[in-house]
Amino acid sequence: MPPPALTTVRARALFAPLDEGGRAETVARRLAKAIRLGLLLDGERLPAESHLAGQFGVSTVTLREALASLRQMGLVETRRGRRGGSFVRAPQEPQSARLVRPLHLLSIHELRDMGDHRAAVAGAAAKLAAERALPPDVAALREYAGRLRGAATLTERRRADARIHIEIAAAAQSPRLTRAEMDLWSEVGDLVWLPVPDDVVTAITGEHEALIDAIENRDAEQARRAAEQHVLAETGRLIEVRLGLCEP
Amino acid sequence: MTSQNELAASLLAGISGQVEQVLGSVRQVGEAMVAIVAAARAAGRAPRRGDLAALRPLVAEVLRRHQGFAAGAGVVLAPDVLADAPLCIEWWWGRQGLEKLEVDLDPESAEFYDYTTLEWYREPQRTGEHSVAGPYVDYICTHEYTFTVSAPVVCAGRFAGVAAADILAEQVERMVLPGLSMLGRPAVLASGDGRVIASNTASILPGMVLSSRDADTGLRPVPGLAAVQPGHPRTALPWTLHSQG
Image 1 (cartoon, chains in turn brown, green):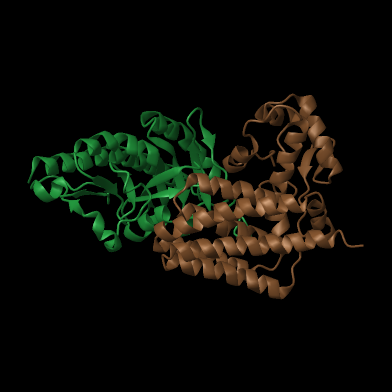
Image 2 (spheres, each protein chain N blue to C red):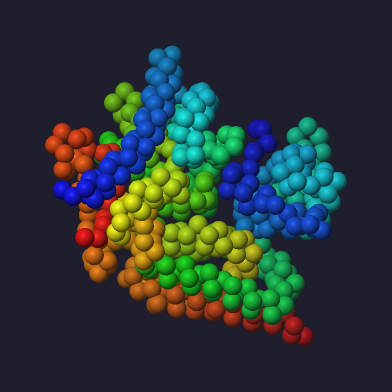
């Protein structure tokens, strides 16, 4: 099989212009993000180094540096030989310890701020979706809510959950809010579905359904409130887990 | 009929003409697909995904022809038409250079892109006629506010998929806004399901849905040319103009 090209969605997400400084680190961070979001799939061969370097607009030396740090993080594996190359190693059904690790790197302040940002985007998207969604948009939301309810693994849950929020932003008729949700989910997707007890899973699916009900009923304020409360509850749970990491 | 109404009706006819030209190109791509499928079958085999690569030059030409208007085009196949792929999208897009769209068509995958449920696929399949879907936020390909114009492809009497093209909402607005602004009163262009495509007033914005609840906007549908000029062909578009007064 020839090495796969990246899909346009993934290429767009990956190859937006880089900031100056710490380029290897930035490339590594962006690739890690794409792997965690599932934009790059487990076992997938990355494009050739020279090609990838060109797409990021960095030198091959910088790119190799980035790949080396991804190897250290266990997110990329490099094999030699004719069928060699760099392959994605996505955490499929990661261990809870591994999931909690990135949480350790975030301060309570950062988690709260991330929650505030998500609440702002999700709240605005939900309000506009309630005003602008047509029945087929609502049907699509119900479909993903059903998938979330039926999801058996963390990965499935994370993807269905992300899809619901991205679809709400699309139903708001806003490409910008849709991109904002996609970006936010690439950051938090790993975190919000840390192993949670069954009653919390039920609570989360219930929150989604209440939110979709409000959108269907064209109740803009209720939709905004439901989205904000959903995100804040999620953020609260994360902060509790994070605080738990400090306990002796 | 007032001259204002005439102006409005010809505005609608103008944008319809533009979209119909894209639809003409879409049908041309569909015919090319029919020929490819027929040639494979005449050779005693089922068509394969690789056969469809032959569409690329035609799609490139179509996108050149509608440069700045159509953002992407291609064919999307009905299940099990091809021997080697149950589902298939052969789609090219891009402002500079042609990019091939790749999406996940594995039904077992969490990222499965099930196009058979989408309006631009389902409607031509259901009605046997073309469809103009949108505007909608296309987060799969263009990442923009987009329309999809599609037409059924029928091979040996059976629905074999659709040929289609994406049109950016921004381009439609660019085309109709000068005309809307000339009307001298609040007016909007809306899709068949009442979604505002372009508006000449800040009080009604693109993306909003016109409904009975918004009766206070005072907007009334403006009859199209077909309704007021006997013998004028109906347009291919489900879009309508609404204006005050």
